[in-house]
Length: 236
Image (cartoon, rainbow, N blue to C red; front, side, top):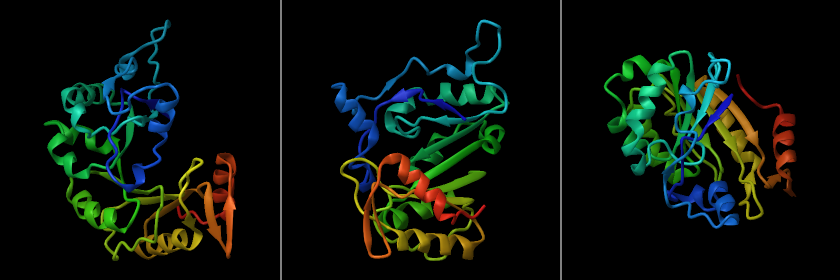
């Protein structure tokens, strides 16, 4: 996997953004995260090394826009350039996460049919309110690969047996020193819903403030990932 942060900066959109890692990291360097700007990596998919080879090798999955949101309003100025690069690099797949599904349909390019099989779009739904609000919108968009990200998971979520068109749900607790509580029973309930819907499930991380079997665990970031893997509850 290759990281392509073509822009940097964002605006807090909903409850899951409260302790966003991008804002926290920028604060350490006195950077205003609310100023959205292009980065030096904007043209990364089109760059070659000294041997004339692509810096992003053919066949790679490109993790796109992880220090912003590809569908944020400021990206309107540059998004067509990004779509064109994705079109030109027909040998790559692109993976992006958004909290703005209501903007996706209006942001798709005229040549979307050429791209959609290589674009994986994930929508974050951190609590019941955002699941109820975003899921119906997300399901209506003409996307070939559609995933839900429940991270940080802030409460139990019921998808009301309405997971048509969803390929996978990834769940994770919140990281950082101010991590909000994540209950293991919430995680298992989403897994149950995925199993009943016949879709994939991935337990990404426990979060730094994790409740299981009557005990509250404070975990380092490394242990959050390790313990989630040890739970062995993924559905492929």
